Image (cartoon, rainbow, N blue to C red):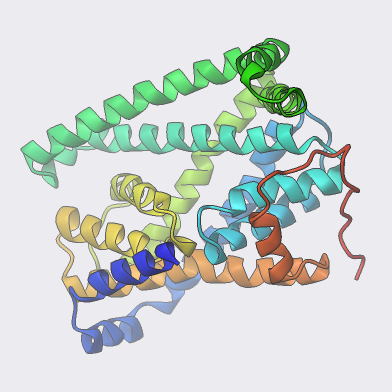
Length: 344
């Protein structure tokens, strides 16, 4: 309830910056060809996400592209429908059930994805800030703040990569450490927590597999370039003059907006986009609001609709999805039967 109120409040604030009649006129005048290309860029991002995920999953066990792609779409659909980023838990859960992998280990690969995403976003931001003349669009005082934030984020990303390697190389020690720390808990619970920690740590195995690590890192950059392409194509469809590299700065703001745990990042994504294009690229408020709404819609609506179709094909109702998202304890593969997609 609280996140719904937050989403509605942020969206209302976002809309308050523009004349809605003018916003609708801007939407009607947008270039349809560029909007379609933006949609195709979104499709490419989900294909790349599935490929990258397979490399992270490879040290845990073999997976099919079809399963990785479908569960990725379902997971991101859940992100658009449910609060608190429930899709990030549902996606590995569904894939692990269908491929017979450990849920705990598969969940760890989602954490790895987020670290690689952070590395890619910060690298592209650094290219824009230090490599392509950001001083022409960003005031000096604000540029300094961005540079410091990017540097701190970069150090955090490096630290996280190091931590992943440590955890991946010592899963048994991690389990023993958690068991020792959990002595204050009842023995049965302490053992379960320790086992979860061990399996979860094993899920970082790609961090010690040079090929898997290299390929996952390599695919992260075309992924975020494709995400930037969708944003750029829709932005220029509304006549907003933003260079393609400018999306590297805008994406950093949108990542912050998406981090707010509202369903589908409603409100927070829109406001982050509006602030970015008006502050750094001189967009008019009405055009910025119109472009934000359409950019968000192209990013979320197709994947939500496709995810609902995949859910129906796999015998997953929305109520079942909500039930899984609300489960406090995610059982592992040796405790529940494997889910198989419908053959329809």
